[in-house]
Image 1 (spheres, rainbow, N blue to C red):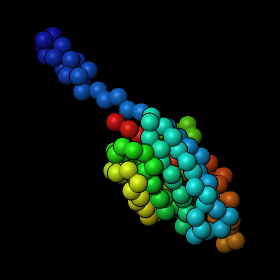
Image 2 (image 1 turned 90 degrees about the vertical axis):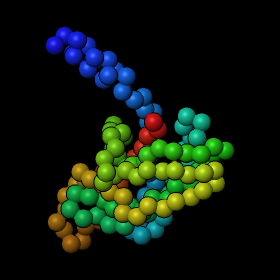
Image 3 (image 1 turned 60 degrees about the vertical axis):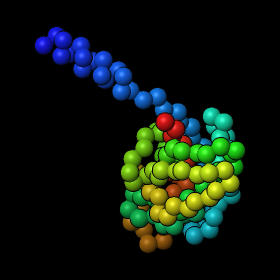
Length: 142
């Protein structure tokens, strides 16, 4: 039994992954369905430009279109998602896998940012609700 536990412990240690993460604040335009100002992100030797367009606020979720452009001289392979500044956790609903060659761009539709303020008002200001949610774009590298 002790040998089994030792082997299991070694396997767990050998299987750990080291990840790098970095977050940047999002620029949201003053109107729904308009692209915000580009964000220039530099991290771990990569240069990425990100643009975000708010589609809608529904329930406690904000939906965004997100455009990524790899401005680096090397391929980018990692994940990106919309989170809070204190949370770089990647979930299926808020993250996308990016495989971009230098100069390549890709746009993902309806990327979610959950746990925003709930509003039942028909006259709710969707832009304000989503700005108050304090969204950040987080990059995760393996």
